[in-house]
Image 1 (tube, one colour):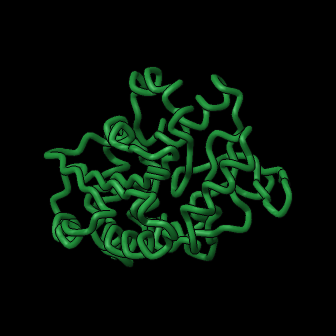
Image 2: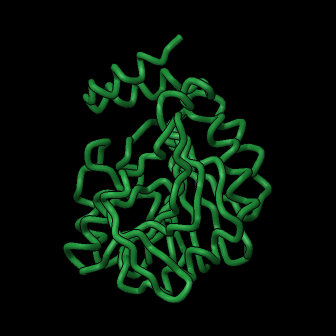
Amino acid sequence: MKISFVILTWNRYKFLEKCLEALIESIETPNDCEIIIMDNGSTDGTRDVLNRYQNNKLVKVILRKKNYGLNAYKKLFGHAKGEYVVIVDDDVLTFPEKLDTLFIDYMQTFTHYGFIALNVIQNEFTNGAKPGPECYTEEIIGDKVLQEGPTGGWCACFRKREYKKLWLKFMFTNLNMRKSEDGVLAQYFQRKLGLKSGIIKNAVCFHATGPYYARQYGHMDREIEKYKQSKMQTLVLHYEEYKD
């Protein structure tokens, strides 16, 4: 198995539906890939979406009875068999073509990076969760350009062999919205293994994060509940401003 795409989902079936359709279409060599979806105790239409893929050999589904929050990534990563693991947020709705080949090419070229993500569309409704350009410096190898700097987990790749070196420390880290799986991984790769994090400048996905798209897709209450559980009151108020 060359590459594992892993998705943790909870009560965002409309996002998940579009995410899976786009992700499957973007994969060039499905025989070398797997898509693992962990349902974190959803109570909406998520199961109906997942049932459509029960005969798809590319897709594997793990169902959990309750929401374990971001700590569920610890078990999810353990199911990944690929040499490379790609975290895919369920609110990523478009991907570049040949996504699997793209990540492998960049990971093999930029061997001194441990965590590499796609770039994101930024418009009047979302910044894609990516900080401003002042946070990045470019590194070029041949025709490939990485932006070294803050790297979100909307669609990001790491090597399984390097994760195994950090596995125990990661397992004992309590993950939450303030200390998320992507931030923790990027930090550990840097501090423990001396590996950088960066974004592929010219490979863009649509990360539909933010209150505008939450309202458009009917997930507003879910987002507010998530931030309430994390005691992130500023974001709760921000999302509530967009409610009808």
